[in-house]
Length: 208
Image 1 (cartoon, rainbow, N blue to C red):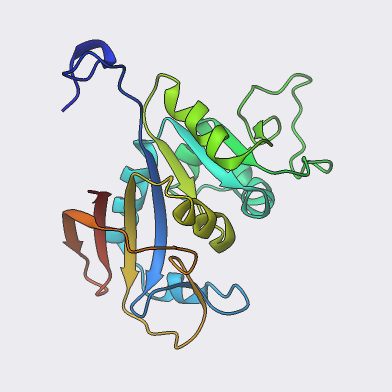
Image 2: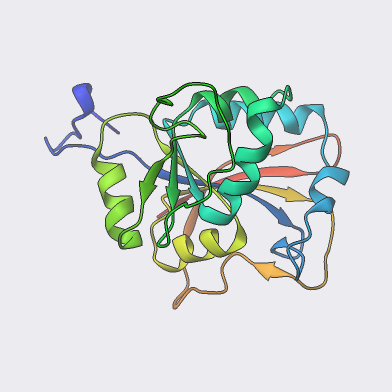
């Protein structure tokens, strides 16, 4: 339990969590073998959408892999979907070792706000070091968005403090698994489970 003014009960400075939000099939895949994600939209609903929007609004910053960033930055600024507002309003940090030479967003502002789609924060160093730096900063928790590759790398390095998995009622048979890079088992504590009308289940786990 955190103490007042960001201090843990021991007097140590508390760090914010890295939370991974991820859709998962019933058989444990986060996408099809070629990145297919149509199954996510077939098995959603208004109640699971509300859970998603609530999760997004709790973020202090969005942590995004470079491939996902380009797709998101081309979509969200002009979207009127319910989850677009928290994606647009909350600062973005992009993890890339190659930089972002071709920005996917054109905005009128001559000096786009730092952390916006047009001017994201760039994290181009060692993944563990960059995550540690973000965790040490004040603010609400960091919400990570896959791409399967980015999510797998975060999990494999043991950087995720909390998993928010939306398990969809579909079996893919083959695809990209979230935990394939683990070198040893990871024990998790179930914080909450919420079932939706579509049959999807939101599971929140924290690292023990």
